[in-house]
Structures are given as structure tokens and as C-alpha cells.
Amino acid sequence: MQKYEDEPLVAAVLTPYLPDIKDEDGEATQSGLQRTFETLWKLIQAGQEKNWRYDQLQSDPDRLRLLKGLDHKPGLKWEVLGLGDNQGKSPDSVRSKEAKLPQAGVLAAGASNPEWVKAMDGGKVPYAWAAGYEADVPESGDESWQRVPALYFFQHDRQVKLDAGWRDDDHPAFAVPSSRE
Image (cartoon, rainbow, N blue to C red; front, top):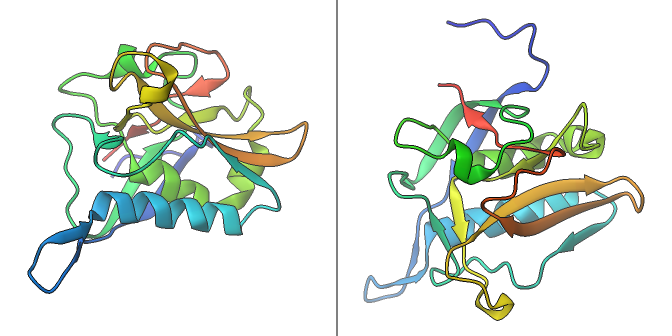
């Protein structure tokens, strides 16, 4: 087992991957990906006094999907995440076939560690892209699937925020967390 003592922004996170909800005929009425995303956001909100979400960031299958090569297998999974990895890099710059980019794990880290979220300052504790997701925000006029969910805490108004930024944004305040195992 690799040791992470010198890396304070490495965390073991128990991530739920919820199953689809199906109707009487066995047809999915809500995808597990959507349920997981929304449930984890609600848990993040519960751990913070104030919150905001970009209203165009929706979780239905036409608006949110996993990056190619990633899957959503229902169950609980321990994930070791480097929450400060790739600070200042864009999600696009670290995406590759070899990259292990978390999606629900980033949100699970925020849900299970509200103090980590409150400590986000865009410097020593960077904001986090959930780069394993791709978001489509058609109302913005940009090409399809150009956005990535972002979790951050705005210190000025003490508010957790769930936003959708450009996948090629290499803002120095954001990290692209990676899965370590």
C-alpha cells in the first residue's frame, strides 16, 4: 500500500453509486448516475449553511454523462482521491485513456468532509473539478458537452457552489482530482 502522509489533500472516500429506479415494466425512470449526482449534492448542501447551484447544470441523461471509458456500477466503492492533484490544469489537459478521473467521488468527498469544502480557498486548498463527468449546457450557446461540474466554496459569502465550467479552463484556483487506486 502506498503511503500518503506528505500529501494532506489525499483522502479515502466511500462513494455510493446508486442503481437506476425502474417502473413496473422494468424501464428506468431515473438513472443511477442522476440519482447519485443529486443525492450527493443534497448531502453536500446539508453540511453547509449556504449553497448555490448553476441552474443550467442538470443531471438528466441529456445533460450529464460520464467521460468515455468510465462506468457507473451500483454499489459502494472505496476511492483514494488526490483532491489537490493537477492544480492549475484544465480537465481536458489531464483526460486520457490512462487517467483515472473521479466523478461521484469528488461529490462524495464534499458530502463526507464538509470541513474540506469550507477550507477551499483556491490556493492551498484548491477548488475541485469533477472531471469524470461531462455536462451539456445548451442554453449557453456553446458546443455540446463542453462543460465539467465544479465544486467550490466561495469564502466571500461563505457558500458552497456547484457550477459547470469549461473543460479547457486551466484556472489556477482549481484542481483536477485523480483516483489514486
